[in-house]
Image 1 (cartoon, rainbow, N blue to C red):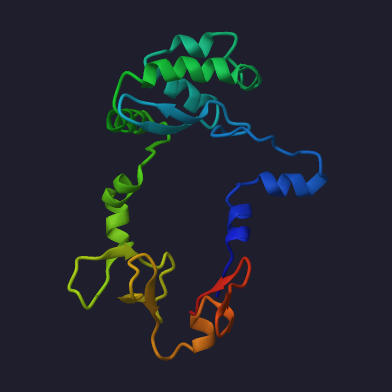
Image 2: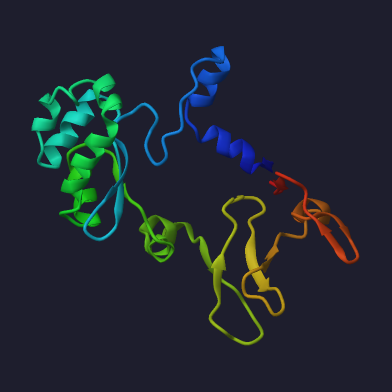
Length: 213
């Protein structure tokens, strides 16, 4: 199995790369934290952080406007249609932002999801590790060490049923780069993410780290 970050990044752009390849003309423009064509979709400030709201289509936009307490935005000529919302994106986002700042992230996520509007929190690093799904996946793993210290690091994001990885030990004098342990059935060449290793030199293969399944 090959895992390539460049390929994953291209695939994460939904259908936009395919549309660009189809005729070379339908190329979505960069829009920062906003969605290029689905508006309003992006990052909005809350009273204690930030959330991401996604309104894909007119019906969800109407539900969103109702949920944030601004149904008049739906009939406003500047925001009544998708082309109008695209043209007036900045003004619309500012109007929504004034409302989202009044409540907490948890409150908005609960209320918007209940209204059928896709919405989620934007975490800080420590908040991410407290998320229920992150805990369930066991991404943070304890690392055995000779000093009997409480060391917890990020494990492999790829889960293999036949050859699962685990934290076996940390590197000497470093708590940030632990050794990873694969079963003995996996060849040394396959399990090492570093190739071209010579004495006094480490050369990492560009754009590809391989994990054995």
